[in-house]
Amino acid sequence: MRLSNPGVRLVWPGRSTLNRAPLGELRQRRGSDGRVRLIHGDNAGALRVLAQSGVKVALAYLDPPFFTGREHTLVERREGRTDPRTRAHAFDDRWESLEAYLESLVERLALTRDLLLPEGCLVLHVDPRTSHYLKVLCDEVFGGASFASEIVWRYRRWPAKTRNFQRVHDVLLRYVRDPGAVPRFRQLYEPLAASTLATWGDRKQRAVVDASGRRLRSSSTAEATPGTPLGDVWDIGIVAPVAKERTGYPTQKPEALLERLITSCTDPGDLVLDPYHGSGTTSAVCARLGRRVIGVDANRRAITIARRRLAALDVDPLEERLIEPDEAAPSATTHDEIGLSEAG
Ligand SMILES: C[S@@+](CC[C@H](N)C(=O)[O-])C[C@H]1O[C@@H](n2cnc3c(N)ncnc32)[C@H](O)[C@@H]1O
Image 1 (tube, rainbow, N blue to C red):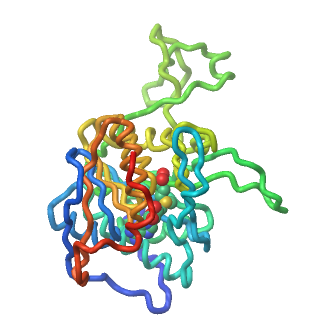
Image 2 (cartoon, helix red, strand yellow):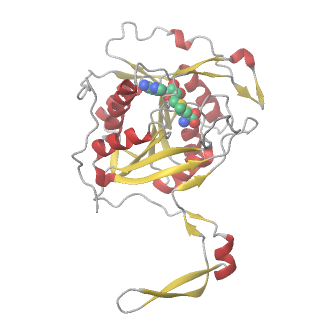
């Protein structure tokens, strides 16, 4: 049975309705390669401006703060070494309440939904402490029929001292914009299990069915199998402290994870959006895979780290700053812009 528009809705006291804030504007700061746009500013304002300019994306990947109740700091890592002198504020994940957190996300989910192509999709990356609330909110924003997958990203990490099972997974909720459209989707494969290989070998199997379509048995073909279609539980390592891709930005996600999403949900040349861009994992992967990308982050240092990461791939991203409508002196340097070396 398919869910369409559920009558179930998550409510909380004081839940606000749509925010019709006035529009800001984007001001170009530096860079020349329009295939990679980095926007410094609050993503809600940036998403509104992008919608106004008619931007449409094939994939939006959202990796917001996880409601950890902590302030996250960064220590930059360059040429394989961390430099403790660069320790700085990265982003604040302290919220007045769970309701305030959900309120912030649901607004941004709706703004992002409106930027998707009909065949496009949104992937929201959260953790199991909030994913159940967010799935209900996504059903509300998209309609239940748009739910496509709940991907479990399973990783290994240093065990925590806890009288509980170790928490070793994140949740990625994927929703398509228009469930009636043929979705962008490229089938990826994973290796066959050892037991399957032992029984069936590495040739493609063809199902033999009877007149009513009932499967009777399988027969081997001469063709080599590409593996088994990729499932929704992904075993991918976290970014190790010594990994080459590590930037020192907190909560940095592995390129291998983004590579899977981008390869399966977009075609070369497509536009990808990451409104919680951080160290620029999405942009780095898009640049390598020939996708265009827009990354937004409220933290000036995140933008600088992403730009350096892209420079290592010979990309000079087009950098813009969101000027909010109530900003008095648009060209003034903010406090956030001070304190991180722009060199390199
Ligand atoms: C979990 S991190 C993203 C990490 C990223 N995926 C990576 O691999 O580096 C979340 C990012 O969202 C940014 N952020 C949080 N709230 C924001 C907002 N309202 N507008 C723009 N950026 C925001 C933070 O500054 C932070 O860099």
